[in-house]
Amino acid sequence: MDGRRGIELAKSDRSSGVSIVIGDTTLKPQGRPTSVRFEKQVACVYLVVDTSGSMAGGKLEQAKDGIIDFAIDAFRKEYSVGLISFNTTAKHICEPTYEVRLLKDRIREMHSMGTTNMAEAIKMAHDCLRPLAGTRVIVIATDGVPDSVDNALREGAKAKRDKIDIITIGTDDADLEFLRKLATRAELGKKVTREVFSRAISDTSRLLPSPKSIIKR
Image (tube, helix red, strand yellow):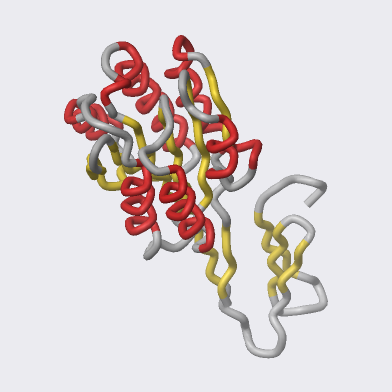
C-alpha cells in the first residue's frame, strides 16, 4: 500500500483467493472463503455541566457557547453528544444526538441555581453510557467544588472501572487536584480562568480519543 492508510483488496496471480490489507496487517482466507465484516464502534460523549448558583450570569452563558462548539467538533469525530446539567440535583437535558439544532434547543433548559451535586450527575452519565458499546467519554465542566468530593470521586471511579474515560475542566474556585483525580489521567484535568471558560470547553473536544474500529470474522 506504499505507506498509505486504508483498506486494500489484493489478488495474487497464483491464487484464486483475495487478501485484505489494512496498514501492516494482511488477512488471508484459509481454505474456504472467509467472511470479514468491518464495523466502526459507536462513540458517545456526555457533557456534564455545572449549573449551580455560582454559575449565574456570564459563566453559564459561556458554558452554553462552549457546549455548541464542542459538539460540532465531536460530531466531526463521529461522536454523538448527550447533555446533563447538575446543581442541587442532576437533570438529563438531551439524549445522545448528532443534531446541533437539538442541543441548541435543549440548553435553554439550563438555569443556574442551588448547590453542586456532581456525584449524582456522574452517576447519571455512567448509567446512560454503561450499556453502550464502543468509545464512551464523560466531560465535566464546573466552576467550583462539589457538594461531596468523596462521593464524586467514588462515582467517577465506578465509571472508569467500566472503561469510560473522564475529562474535567474547571474554573475559578475549582480544585485542580480534585479535577485531576477525577479525570482518567491527570493531564485530562485542567483549570482555566472564567474569561476563557467557553473556549476551554470547546477545545476539550481535541482530547476525545479516536473511535476504535473492530474487525469481525
